[in-house]
Image (tube, rainbow, N blue to C red):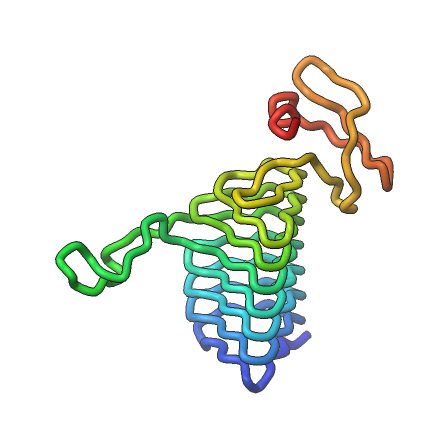
Length: 201
């Protein structure tokens, strides 16, 4: 299977692109980036140097994925999502000289398998977004989100948990250190630690 790159996209010859991936209008993929198989990279998306993107990932129009970001398989990144990578951004050093890439350090960000980031979400650096997390549109994520978490707001806070099918998880019963939940849509049972469950209450 071929890689499909729109004529207006700018893709470095030093980027690694998996089979059956589509890269659309005016997207830019920098050197050293890795994009897996069967991905969709939308119009105007920016993928920076060294970014790693898994298989079956959808990155919607005008999202910005900067150096230091790793996105695992099956992740959805909504339109205009922005990943940041500098905890203390400045244009110049205290002496007035322009900052170079030697004057700051990248804070790595990880988005785990199956997570979804809503339109216009902003992801601060140094964060892990767990598997099957759902981040609401316009949210500003400032801290880690546990697996299956539903995070909303500015700053984003945990408002419950969701199933891989996107249905809301509801408590069925408790064990010593965990809560057994069930999806109201598909009835799948998912075990969540009691400590994590209490964060959303």
